[in-house]
Length: 131
Image (cartoon, rainbow, N blue to C red; front, top):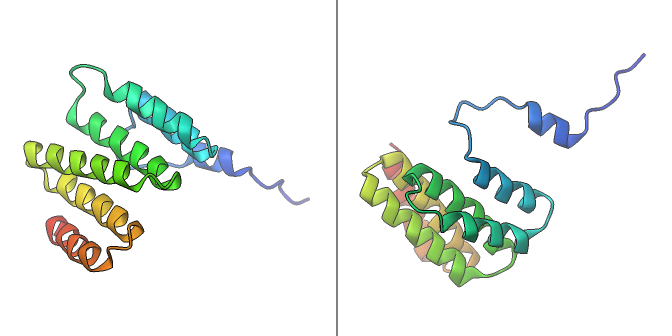
């Protein structure tokens, strides 16, 4: 007898990650985005980012999640602002991991803005930061 197929959501829920657990607010934003509710994801991300004394890693996770929903909504200038905010946080924390991630997000936004030449330079900087 064949095993019943797992639903995609159950598979995602059981996936093991080597990264730190996501903050609950970031997870909520990602859940909205996965459901295609990008306006709600942006609103939830914006509300969560207003919290005082948010740790840099949590702020980066929220900005990243909100940036992806902004891209889905084609709000490219807002997505670029989030990528720039991510880069500023990365520079303040002096973390090469954060910097590489922020640069990769910025390159993604630039590519969506059809600024291919700039996106390639930014992506190369992300790779260099990751090495």
